[in-house]
Image (cartoon, rainbow, N blue to C red; front, side):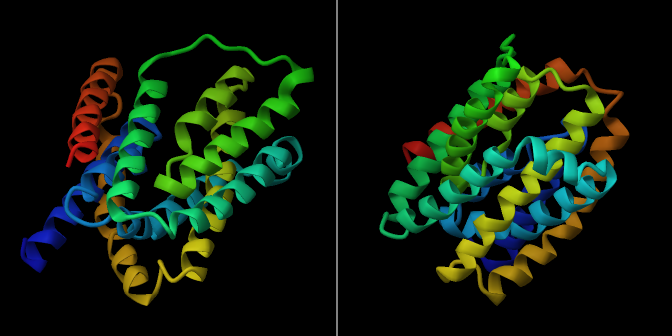
Length: 244
């Protein structure tokens, strides 16, 4: 694949991923990671997601205005997630590209299952702390391997029965703080340099366009049908990546 064709494909992938996020509110890394990993190594894919993930979640965090609340209530989750992310990134340094692609595919498949089914879970207040620690560790593991933290965090916050404003405000803070140790670790271990930074910054252009398109069409599409098509598509891509 030529360099220009590869860049065009990458722009289209980020446009699609941002469109999904604009429509459903989540899902950009789930779409971008497996699709880009079909043509470039998984570590490079994760690096290129850096600026779109950081910028989009920074905007949502500022709009939500729940930084102090989120740090106080979900501090243990965030702490364990940070530690697990750093340790996982370090462990992946010794893995082959084939193994990393397989781990990414498995992570996307697991995330797809979590998003495809609506579990009627409920977490009692007395169990919130230890369950948050477990979710933080598991999401940190997925983050270090694939940059995917969303599905586990979504399931956890839904089980806490937060109202819509608390849910959106809290999840954006958790997403943002999860991304910081991931990309700082990638930078420290020489997986996120100036080259990746520039390309990742260029990806902001199709990301902004995709977000706007998704928001415009959000109320014109059947969310249930759109979600089912997306889950089927991601399952197919993940299987192709797994057996590549």
